[in-house]
Length: 290
Length: 327
Image 1 (spheres, each protein chain N blue to C red):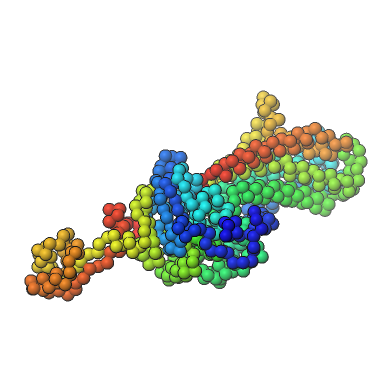
Image 2: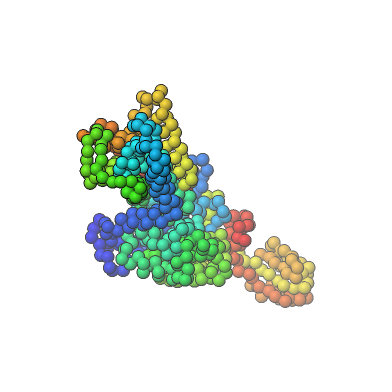
């Protein structure tokens, strides 16, 4: 009898059992639900604030030069703009922070709980486990963005009128096309988060403490966001993962202005490639002593 | 990979009989700090044995187990498990191995059953169609069926230990690696786990059992190895190990002084007098003559004989130290 014959048969589909288990486990965690709850609350607060302000008779955002996130002035005319405003408000910090928590905890959290060793002797396979973890974090990016977008759409529809909308370029598009743009924007926002997701996963393979990995990832996010504001560093800024994040607004131009969008997606791909490989190299060679 | 038959029961022996189920040659691990945790280990675990792996805390047992399970890369030397090199063959070997390493680790926010479902999903060879049945069977085997729906964070240490054992029993295994499996269990639980181990062993599963409880090893193991300071001191069958140490001759008597004098006169070494009891190294000659000499000298003998050497005596003889952690 050859040795191959004694191996258990592996259906290629069974390998996705781990992904399913990982998704279920992640979304059953109280912490994940709390993060999503916070994200869902942001559009509600923005919507109510705008509603209250306009009820005072102050008029919607005194001119386009007014402060606040992009598109906030248009919300009272069209509730759909709350989707864009909410994404613009959460993208600099709330969304990446949530991603940083989930990505940072991905490997390090299993290590500090001791469950990592049991997953590996199951045997989950180190590459398979890492890919599963990254796929789960990516799924979380999409879900988190959609939670913000759907919450904003609901609040926008309840508090404000809906209808055709005016793009930044001044042209009119139908409400249906506007919804399509909103979905596209949500997906671009989710894609903008893949870089920090890869970075967080890499940090997660470096330590056996879930808290340390989460704190480091979120700390890096804040540092980069601050450095991105310092004019003297303009030579470095195009390489910060957050530098082109707000380019998603260009999807609301007619025709769409693609330059910064492409730069953003390219930069995210670069981060995924570099930190994904680093995470793989680190995790597959690591001694698991926790 | 070749197309393999899914339904037939697993052929249980992946290894040739001559080869050990676990075989290490010069296995060494030096951690980055320079600490030598395991030093040139040559360990052979025969098929179908219940193998006790003994040693004080910090002697390198756990590092060895982690190397065998592919969690730690050896600095030098080789380790073969079920006839295949580790850590290279992790994916083919480990589905045949159930392991409990350094205590159980669970997801506190999941129920006991969901914990097992998750660990089973991590094994790419585990058939999802039979997953719930196998999980239920494993829970039943460790007596956790009633508590299966409770969140694992509400489990007692003993229940966690049982759940950890259950995760090692999700599939039929060729090898079980159990690190301190009775930790945290009450005496009744310990007995249950021991009888479970015997049951598994009689089904043809090789059990590799690390423990600091010598009497536990003595009760369930057929073979044993002793480690101290990263080195393997000895290995062999439990009977051989205990036989390597001679027992003690004992005489129970109210006349301890006379008895000790007679034993010395008879040429016995290492005579020790304790309360109502004299012990000495047993002589090579007929014991009856010794008894006759005692009686002739007027020593009132209440009890007389040779105490069998225990594994603990063997351990002390080998390491020259007590087994403090035995508790």
